[in-house]
Image 1 (cartoon, rainbow, N blue to C red):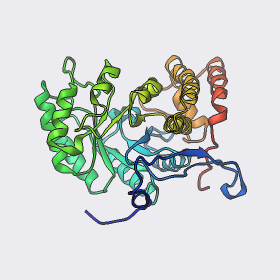
Image 2: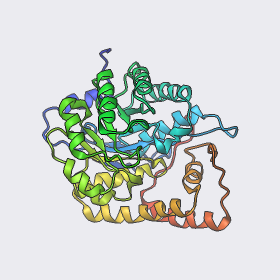
Image 3: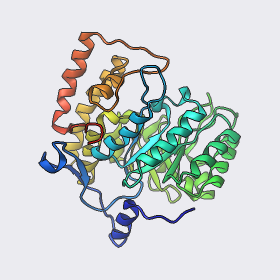
Image 4: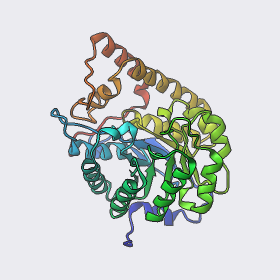
Length: 347
């Protein structure tokens, strides 16, 4: 592993003597220096592996190919928006529709796009079987990400199969590994005690994206346990306000179109402003409901806000009616106090 010092390393060194240091992010006013683009920037030291980790959506060209330029631009946008981490590719990234070659090319694009930034780069290395996952993780390890994440395998019939899978991943890398608890095998419960056993044996497995019901009980069973270093909220942020009060270390979900709003919500929680957390979350929930009731709304917003060049998706072709667009736009206006302008390409 190469020794290198990034902006993140510098921030950690500056804050190493600070106990309970916080990352407080707030929007800067529009000014000439930002070329008319209001940005969200850190004004204190970085909290390691905490905050808003955005699972990046995968953009496509009109022909359906992965749009790697848009993928790279999404990194620039999320940096401006105040996100703390980038995660790709997971379910919100169309992971099942991507080839191994496309994923590896995306790993390279994101590594380059994130170079020199303070964002935590998290590469998703899940595969259907342990040998396939090891091959993917070995490739990712060569790119020196900050962290890896893996959903459970889709083959196997017991927790022992899960143990083999995650143990093999922990042998590939000493970097932090986020366990995503999404159930991939019907009837197989990813028990919290089992997660703690894994983290006891491999300390770098002590990072958990919790999304199995009963999610609130499971979060409380993990938060504060000695083996568990970080517990993250998920599920599109629908329960984020409550999860924050339960002590989660951040959110890991697909919400690039609202990244700066979730960053404000996180900052308010770190400041103890729970009224602001509630008020921001209420407006976000309206938008999340729109996405549930109007298929294609999320992809529409990614293009509408200028994050993606097209609204093209693989395997789905949504055409929104004017009534649906009007509803999306009406609810989006509720977020206007928290939105920042997406920079133009190359700005």
